[in-house]
Length: 197
Image 1 (cartoon, rainbow, N blue to C red):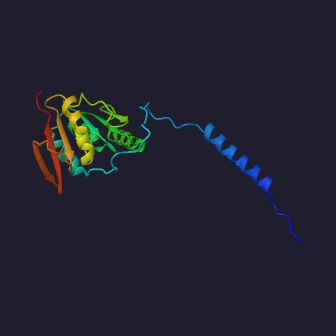
Image 2 (image 1 turned 45 degrees about the vertical axis):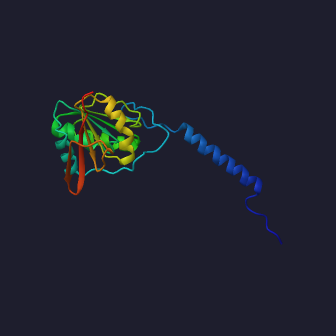
Image 3 (image 1 turned 90 degrees about the vertical axis):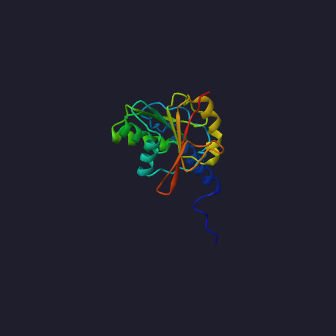
């Protein structure tokens, strides 16, 4: 004696179609979570560099090497959680702009700025650092890798004003000789100054 299956093929197909329709309907009608402020469009690709944060002692050394003051506008290209920009604003009175392609990092940076009370001195840009405008910087901070540094170098040299300081953690700029190199906690920190044209 054969038993009849509980769910027939046609019923299974109907249930599957209804399930897909329900999921699609929920996706289309789910409310979006708005950001506190509008952010630029995110490019449809991932980061060029894996996220890694600099320890506080390294951040302090980078700001010290660049001689950051309250007169500066500090840009951090690939800002991650925003700690360099926030420290520049909180500890040195500078204004800062952090640029990162990862929305989660921008959310982290926004939260850190709020906790540290510097939201009036910092700006976050969700976007590709290779396409970002940074000509008004007086200091540019980098914690990238060799290839992105070399890729940025021509723009740094042509778009930044003479006298602008560029600081990179761990990676140099090829044959562009740094003005100074410091070792802190086993890491190299490089400083360049944009030369006169």
